[in-house]
Every structure is written in structure tokens, then in C-alpha cells.
Image (cartoon, rainbow, N blue to C red):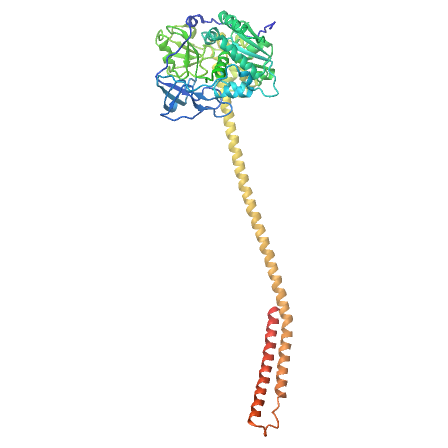
Length: 572
């Protein structure tokens, strides 16, 4: 049991204006003529489409898959035909265009075959639960849109002591979480137990602002139905921004989230009640995230909450609530404190859309600033800042575009809650200045990264050129050295051959001279045959044949001697 709540610094008390939208029960919004589904409905990389124009899809069918670790898939909210895949306006302050999938509903609203794990979720490993949650496209429904499967994966070395369900809903006008806790409290508790099992958390706290008495009673009654006694429903003070993650964690535990750190670094995970109900439907029924509760309030004839299919346009919801009370000047996506204004009323509802406020000039709290006066240095902004910053100094530095100085004053710790805006007597749009400074710093960082990458590419290109030149020079040097060695070897061989030849020439000449002397001596020694006068003709013939044979033998011997001499010369 929690024995003490902690009070964070700053904060403001704001008129709530919540009663008007909680008078009617939540009903499903009608299926529109077409659904525009942005692929960027979460923090991180946009989903990648896996369907084609003209393809028929069923309700709950995956039409875009997660493209990276920090990403989430998109599913068809109803059955129909893929009409287009192209760029359409997003619910974003800049009014930017981004890739969307357009579905033309067929009116059948026919589901795909679903596979749930009712009753046996404890048999599943936490990693299996995370995979189901990831494939179901569940992200934080409290406004940030961070993929829930990542938040459920603190790592093997992290121990989660406390799981906090955020049901504070501190913004004026917004009542979607309030109505969800009233009507689907049991689903939230079931989702809480699943999340607890995935995180192996030791205790669970459901934090609800004390102005939501019906929601508190409903959640307390639902918690009693379960055997787990580590679940506690806690009413916290109604002060804005009590629903901010860091503030609600401090209120419950007294622990401060470290600078540039995450709640899991102090053993805490904080999750929205709407996200928890979506986890229950994904695990028990196998349903992907295709709809959510949305508050339609402000200058509308019948303020209420509707369960809206993603991709439904704001204009369709306004018409289902009876239309506006006057000509619409703008609509605000989110609450009046942290929401952003849009001029287009045809923008679609996405996973992070919790409220649509209609400004037709009839509600005083939604009036825009008529003028801005100089800062009077009253220091009221610093008194109400819930993260203990110096808004006045941030304002001066952002106005002067002294981006280095403003980072020294921790501009990125600003949660853009708007408390400083709310109390500023000069009506200075302080948060807009801080957003501008952050965007400029991010822009400068991107440009620095691009220039660093370009410099690295140039240096590597130059390195590659120098390396190739060095390699060519080395190859040429080695080739020249090889040629030089070969030439030296050839010259040395020729020199040796010439020397041998010179040495062999006198020997050859001596041999030839000796042979000539032998030949001459033999010629001189040649004698005429004697006593041949009385020989018969036959005997004379025999003598002649003998002489011829002897002459042939001598010629043969001389010829062989000459050939041997020539061969010896060649070898030399």
C-alpha cells in the first residue's frame, strides 16, 4: 500500500470542462466512405505498405509492416478495397504530407480469422507476448506513440519494481481515458496482468486524478475481482500536468527520472490505460489495434466520446456529433495545453489522436492570443515549470537564436506542457519559441551530420586515390627492378659466352690445322702400286676396288672430324 504521495514542483490548476463530454455512453462511430491511414502513426520509422491498389482486404488484416526496430505495423480498420497509396495531409502542426493507404469500405466489416490466447497468457514467454503486441501494432495511446513492445523489453539485467498505469488524463476537455476506465475497467485490469507478466513487475499502481470518482470506483471494483493483491488504485491530486510521465512517476514513487534516462533505469514502467486495454484485446482475442476512444468537444452541438476507426476524418466525427455551433475557425488535435491547431478538418484520426477540439469562436478558453506584450520579468513562468527550468532565459536565448546557450539551460528537458504559456501575463507563446529552438538545433545537428559524412566520404575518396597511386607506383618499381635484374643476367650470360667463344677459337684453329697437316701428309705418303704389270684383269680390278674403299674411308674420317669440331664450337 502507498502510504505517501509526493508533490512535484510547479503545475497549475486549470478549469477542466470535462462534464459535457461524459454525459453520453461511448458508441462506435459509423464507418466512413473512405479511410485514410497514414503510415506514420508512431514514433520511429514509418511502416512499409504490403498491399497494392485494387486489392481487397479484410478487417484486421495487416496492410503495412514495421520497417525497423522502432516501428509498428498498420492494419485495416474494416474490410474493403485499397483505393490509393499516396501522399495525404497528416495530423501534424506543419500540415505535412506523407504516404497513406486509402481504403474504400465495402460495408461488410468482415474480420480476418483471429487467434487469441484467452486464459493461457501465463504459459507464454515474455518475448512471445512482446512479439504478439508488436505484430498487433500497439503503441502508446497517451500521445507519444512509442511502440509498446519496446517498452515491455527492459533487458535481462533490468528489474522492474513498479508498473504504473496512467489514468490521470490531466488535460482539460479530454475524457476518453475516463470513459474507458468507467466502461472497460475489467479489460484494463486483464491487460495490466498481462503487462505485469511481460515485465515481471513486482507491484502495479493505477494512478487516477481524484476528480474522476466514477472511474476510480469502477477500477477499484474490477481489481477486487482478481486474486492478485499487488494491484492498487491510487487517487492523485488534480493538478496539471500530473499525467506527464516523469511527474506521475515522482508523485507515486518519489523517484526522479535521470536526465537523458528512462523510467526503467529507476525500475519503473509507465503505461497508458488505453494502451493496456489494447494489449488485453491483442492477447486474449488476437485483435490488432484498429480503433480507439476519441473525445469530440469544444464548439460542437453534442460533445461526447466515440470509438473511432483509424483513418476516419475529423469532419465525419463532427457531423456525427451534430455539427459545430458556428463556423469552424480551426480544430485542435489534443487538449488546449499541449495540442496543436489544424486548419484542415479532413485530417484522419490516428493511433495518437485522443481528442478533437472544435474552435468556432464560442468557447473563451479556446480563443487565440490577440496580442503579445514584452516580458515584464515577473518570474511566474519559473514558478509553475514542473521540470524546474528557467523559461524566461530559454525565451531570450531562443528569440536571439543563441542555440548553444539555450542547450546549457536544458531546453530539451522541457516537456512542452504549456504551464508557462498559461500563466504569462504578456501572452508570450513561450512553448512555440522552445519548439522553434529545438527544431533549429535538430536541423543544425542534421546538417552537421551531413557535412561530417560528406567530409568522411571526401577523405576516404582521397585516401583511395592516394592508395591506388601508391599501388601503381610500387608495381611499376617492381617491374623496373625485375627488368633490370633480367638485363643484368642477360648481359652477364652474353659476356660469359663471348669469353668462352674467344677461348674456343684458338683450339678450333689448332684442330683444323692439325687435320690439314694429316691430310697433306697422307697425300704425300700416297704411293703408286708396284708389280702390277703382270696382273690379270681380274686382279687389277680387285686392286682398284681396294684403293677406292681406302679413299672413301679417308674422306669419311675427315668429314667426321670436321663435324665434331663444328659441334664443339656451337656448344662454346
